Amino acid sequence: MSDFLYTTAATSARDLERLLHIMHPRQRQVQTFQGQWGQLALLDDHYAGYAPFEDERYLLFVTGGPLSRLHGEPPRAPTAEQTSRDARLSQALLKRWCRTGTPDWTSELSGPFVVVRVDKQLGEIIFVTDPIGFSSLYRAQTNSGHLVIGTHPDLVAQQAERFSDIDQAALVDLLINRSVCYPYTLYRNVSQIPPGTLFTLRCSPKMGIQEASSTYWLPLEQDMETDLEDAAACLREAIAGYVNQVSGAVGRIAMFLSGGEDSRAIAGAVPRNIERHGYVFVDQPNRESRTACRVARVLGIHPHVGTRTPDRYLRNLAGCTRLVGAQHEYVHVHTFGYEQECRLEDYPAVLGGIGADVFAKALYVPTRRFQRLGIALPEQGVILGREEAGFSVDAWYRDLRSAKQVFTPELVDEVYARRLAHYDRVAALRPESAAEWTHIWPWSPQTNGGADVTGNRRLFRSFEVFTDIEIIKLCARVPLSWKLNHRLFQRAMKPFLRPTWMLPHATEGYFPYFSTATNIFLRPGNLLCWKLQDRLRGPEDNPGPWPVYSRVVASQAMKDLEHSLLQQHGGLLYGIVTEAHQEKPLADWLSPLQRLQLAQLLWSRSGLFQSQPT
Image (cartoon, rainbow, N blue to C red; front, side, top):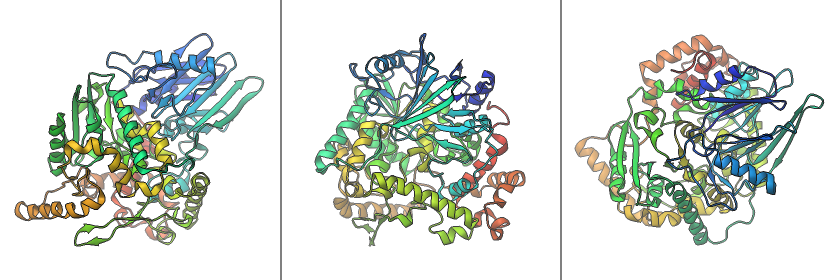
């Protein structure tokens, strides 16, 4: 995605360029624009068709590389022949905007985006955020009253001289929930501009800075679907439409494969008349990679297995933190480095299935799972009440009492109040499914995995199917009960899963092609078979796709890193941690992922702007 920094203050174009170069592992060209409306620096984009378009009056550009579905034109996706300097799509969007009024942002662009239009004659600049917040936009105000707006929270804070002004409640929130509650960031006076919004500034010497905003879309719980089969058919059609739009414009495509169900369903939807390459990343060849390769062979895909060294995530800490920011979990950018090692950056499109479990399978609604002789009986969804909303579903600290034993009670109360306020905000939109949507709207700050979409799009031409606007709108209209037990997902994906019906999920043991009820009888056989194999051959060191984070933090390299960082910046913890825990080892009160998050944050204090990446 293309990133930018905008400021209403007169500043050096070189300073803005230097900041943007810090974030990316491979320096790209930066274009700068300035006028009475302010100064703007734009990092060159690797998505074709979205280069800035400028004429005598207007400047317009689109970040994020969304699919274009402009009215009156056929759907378009970047092709292999187009270059990043092609501005045809930006020009078409500007013409549409000027001739017929504000475009319908819920249909004309699909995927992560921020659209910026500058009217040089009026001194007006309009920022349009995507409906769900896949591409976040941040706003800060300087002490002198100037505004800074950009797509990277740390760069915005640095330009506004807020980088050292840590919001302690947000820091506690980050360590407890592994995310910062919307609309806050790690920094005081730096906040997220709402998704689905037109944010307008007018700058003039006489009137100063004038702000206005209007909302064009919210995930309202209205006009709900009434037939599960119809909803599944619509979801299947939307997925096929997105995949065909992307793959139909290119001669070859890459996709992420796994031993699970999301990626194989997407792979099954891709037309077989193009060259397809599937990538799976694991610690070492294991059940996950073997299953993924079997899926690839059945579907006629060229399989590629990428392996990780034990220290990969520690080596990636600096680069990933620069890429996505200190408040987003850098470990979720699992592809960092593979864009060069596996040449992902050379593909015109890389397909993924991130978000399938979030939007179509109710990931963020806890369920009761009853175990009977290793058989998982059907789950009963639990709709959380307001009092439970202060903590993420997978938070390490399950209640206020346990959190206050570790962190300063006043700060825990503030975190809880912020999250309850956000729950109330979402409940006003979705009273029946607030527990689910509190954790996914807006996307990036609320979801622990929000960094993966952002990181991938900054590294290569990533197209995530479940960022499609038609899919998002449909999933907002689907009753929560349909998403439980994979009911909606399984019915929608069944035709795409049919070629691989005989292959079980590599870690859970069920067959994605079949329903949950059928898998009650099928799954135990796989689990028993794996146990027998472990007895005969010995258990696999790590049969799944993700690293074992407890091993990552147990390494001597991690211990040395923590010791060094605590010596330099350990003072940050004294104001947020109870006295009883200030001298305790981190392993006593933080989970492995929280320790990595803390290391990321502490490293950013001196490392982020110390030098440019090589």
